[in-house]
Length: 279
Image (cartoon, rainbow, N blue to C red; front, side):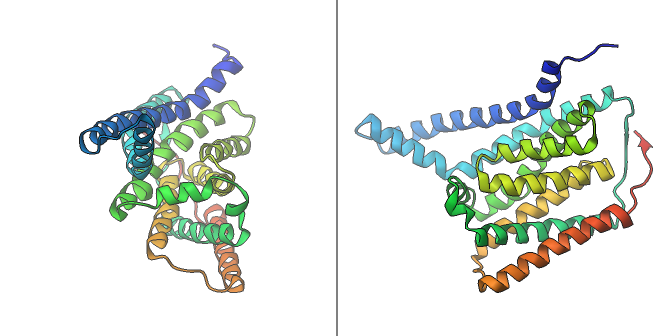
């Protein structure tokens, strides 16, 4: 039996993320070429500096579209890698998610989203660490329908295939404990977001999604939870709902955190995952 080296194990864990980032870079590059051609035909900027500025501004306006297209392109190869990994595992098996888990995961995702966003706002971390405000403005700009489709649905599916379906599953093979693999995958998910504020939130959410995946051995569980974290954020941003007084907001955030904890308690102790079924 072949003994995998540390380098090989690290490569297996991290190359899905590198692959995903590579697709995003390629889509951004190709998009900038089309944007440059369009600007040259329409505006004909006088200087190279003006041209660069116009391309950069236009590219930023299409951040959601570029992110969504990258996610769509990622789906087929990510599914292929997951299927190949499954065939090479000692047991090719899966569980069905019981009906009671679906509303529990949905409510947990929504409460995590609302509670997490209120906590970020109350903590003022967005003013302490750079990056969060700029990313939020880019992600929640442009067509609301595009945000719903891509940020709310497509991106969560692609990210779950990459971070839970591939990275977490592979980390679990090489780590001494499942908990260590869950923490590692959540940490990678946090670093991927590129700023401290989103990173803290993504680490907690990433850990919960890894738990949901481990509980039911179905990628549909973290996908559903992830969608229910993203969709409310898009909708609430569109509605421009202002927070009540800081005290009321703190009560709401505390209630959401408590509700999320209770729902995961129910998932862990009350809802039983069915036995493995061979594919």
